[in-house]
Image (tube, rainbow, N blue to C red; front, side):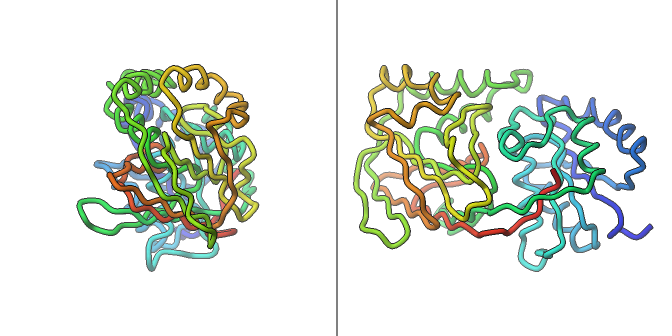
Length: 307
């Protein structure tokens, strides 16, 4: 059977503290029981998933499946969207085994790997918008695609700490622990925010969150109205909130009721620019990439996802 008739699985063995490596043989058995033809490769280093996905597209695999957490999904996505690798018929598949499953919550991919494999066999897809963020790292201009959520400020600082947590810590524990630790030292920052072609908004903020989907941080419903098919970002700006008030508001983020807080502003836009006097860290799908200045651009109906 030629590659185009098979799926290619990009497996991150260290996702979820090494859980992925342990469950992969069971996933293989599940795929074989479904008579789903596939090939696979393990990632060996950060960003290796991007290389593997790009090579899979060049080898004419139609469906490329990320096996791991949301970070693995993002790396595979960027491989599919690499210059010279973009194909209109390319499909992203998702089998979540890692800490984060925020994307899966919005698009309806089952958390259980056996159910996720069955969905892959069903061949059903949905077409979603993508985000493309331009940022800077070590004085170099860079870009990264995302399907879920990107943000600058406090949320990126928390992600930076959470990603350095011991591998045995899973679920929301690393994020919540890092949130409290970061809060002790974090200082809100002055930014200039430009939405589409509107006049700049200047204010002191805790975070600027640009959402294509609804969840981040391991189950926080930060953008409850976000729809990955509507052609718009949901922009959540957390203003100059004090530490005590912030902690009191965190539980509300899990059910999406935080939007009524007076220090939370919401917008909708296709293009979002964020500038700051002092560097503001950027996180994309929970991975810290760089810093301001940032430009988020929405690309409508850009990707097929197997659901």
